[in-house]
Image (cartoon, rainbow, N blue to C red; front, side, top):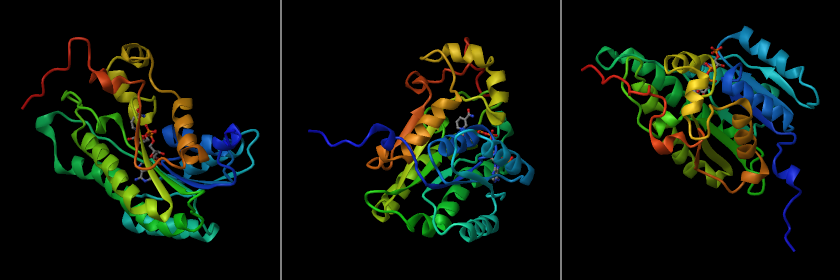
Length: 286
Ligand SMILES: NC(=O)c1ccc[n+]([C@@H]2O[C@H](COP(=O)([O-])OP(=O)(O)OC[C@H]3O[C@@H](n4cnc5c(N)ncnc54)[C@H](OP(=O)(O)O)[C@@H]3O)[C@@H](O)[C@H]2O)c1
């Protein structure tokens, strides 16, 4: 007879303590909502703006049926000293962290010939360097309760842009693509380092999901309906898509999954850049 656990216990996060960077809106807010619904006792919401963190926390704590609470933890994690302060602040409120969703990110778009080093640095600093520095500083808290049977989790939000090539139009996002490929590989390296310490590290690579960051590009490429229609499954990403994968990667169901990247784009990356216009993006001007 099979001894599998009751299915609800495989897909929940009872009593877990989570930190979500970029948790004030967009994909991070979907993750924070899902983690509270799936049973987390505490979810720390990190973003630069105090007001945005507090508004998200108020919204989350008003959710019906949750037992845990969201806690505002503002910090600009592109600055190493802010990462140190953030981890200290969280450490005053909890003696351990079970789940880190390293999700905050930024992008920059410009034509090929107009790229400047500052566009590059801004994106790489937040999307790659700050992920590593935060993981490093948070490892003692993540290690506290991590066991073979119940490992802690780190999830990085990468992007399909880190897996497939994109056209080089007037909004080409060179540093973004490079940063997301880097964070996918960084996550694999972290999986090798932290797996033996009972901390599992995995990436989610979303395609387009409507959000403050993505909406401008979605509009440039024809809008949600048009872009969705071009995708293999006929739509863009929605809240539940991200929520479902986050809960899976944080729950008992995935406690043998380490070092993977889950493309979350309806399969669009399999057929190339579905986001360009029908007649193709203009060639990059050199
Ligand atoms: N939406 C998509 O289509 C899509 C697709 C693939 C990957 N992604 C990735 O998903 C992640 C979330 O993106 P999103 O679309 O949800 O974007 P979003 O709605 O613009 O949210 C970005 C979040 O990051 C926070 N943030 C930005 N800079 C920060 C900093 N220096 N320190 C701390 N927090 C900071 C923002 O809050 P503050 O402004 O208050 O700091 C906000 O909470 C990013 O890593 C993005 O690259 C998104």
